[in-house]
Image (cartoon, rainbow, N blue to C red; front, side):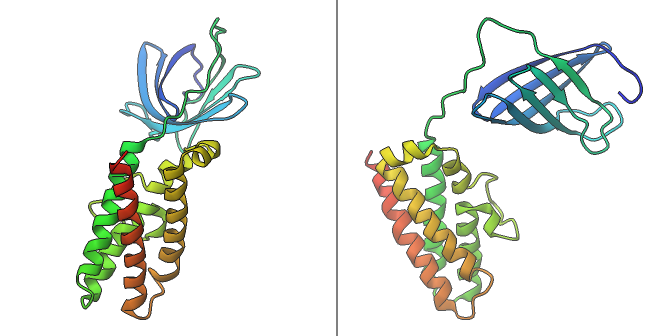
Length: 226
């Protein structure tokens, strides 16, 4: 911390392929953080997160990187956080293996349900412009949260695009329904980008909502039958 150097120990536990917890021990203190992890093909990994509690001066954000070829680990500093940790990881008999990525079918189905329901609400009252736009924003946010400037409430932090991005291309090609979901999502995203903030007439929004509702309802039913 700052100009004072200490010996530190750390422990990283992977929960799944993109989440981990970090415990850091130094000067009879313990700091813990929840991390979002990105593992590279060469088994390097990078992580960002926040300390669960902040008892020392500085920011709460955590940034960490691990280089597999040299086994070097670096933590921080980030922003105004003066804490920095450098070191070499202990070599273990078991090498780091990339966690298997399972297709999160239940999560995908839950988000598709939100998409089909809000798009249905949007087209149920075609003469109410405010209703059409409000529910279409919910719909587009669930497809890809970057499409909507505001944060519709209630709205999840994870969009369908986030889930699909974590699925390998080979799996998408082998799994027919996942391939369909990716295609419909891409088309829907294009329509949201084109009309959500640049529309002139309600029919453009209704056409977008109708396309999304029809296709995502079919996809939801297809997942329901599996």
